[in-house]
Amino acid sequence: MTKPLINLVHANGFPAGSYKTFLHQFENDYRTVAHNQFGHNALYPIHSNWQHLVTELAEFIKKQDEKVICVGHSFGGVISFIAACQHPELFRGLVMLDPPVVTGAFSHLLSFIKRTPYIDKLSPAGKAKTRQSHWPENTNLVDYFSQKSLFKDFDPRCLQDYASSCAVQRNNRLELSFSPAVEADIFRHLPTNLSQFKHKLTVPAKLIYGEKTTIFPIKHFKRFAKLNDIDLMTLPKGGHMFPLEQPENTAAMVKEIIKDW
Image: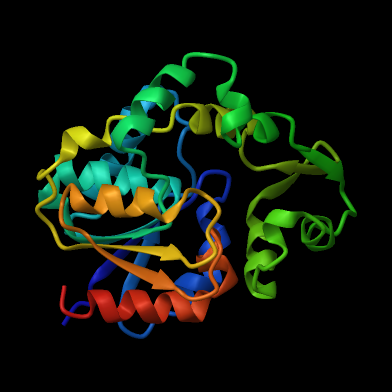
């Protein structure tokens, strides 16, 4: 019998190759696919609420020619949710990992802020647009990124996966494999329309958040989950990047969720 297909949808600024160690945990019982990066195809431009990126995801899934189990991290969890609401025929189920889900009064405030330069201070866009994008070709990127606070709790294998996938050798140096401007622009357009998908999700779904996540207060996950009766689960000691901090623990939790899908 053919193994079920998992479609990994990456976080913003983390090419799909960053999840190599995480996806390896599923090899015995599942097949896995992943679109390497979103937002870099002119056919799917970035705009408010990420709808074109949702379409980019849906088109990628259609190419698999079978229903998928979507496992989406952060940005990937949000576009997977919207795609599942709009195209349920493409999904066997959905697991969202620490997604930045904004609903309620804060979504209205953020909708206004998105139209102002202040969004670069409120979101990670400000840091993304000024991030270093190239290094001398002999640079040890594992050492470089290990000094950054975002990566301090990464599993060493996942840090290596990220370093290997986020840069390419070009122009006699190492250059980011994705555009910092695109990364920043994605952050600026965080969806604030998720409430319109109330009662629209018809496929099995779970949301896992990290016990120590700093993306949002936990109440935001709870408010969002009530829109479609999505069960919440917590990964102990996990930060926002927990799939790359605890790949085995995260995969074990995901496998328990999806075993009957």
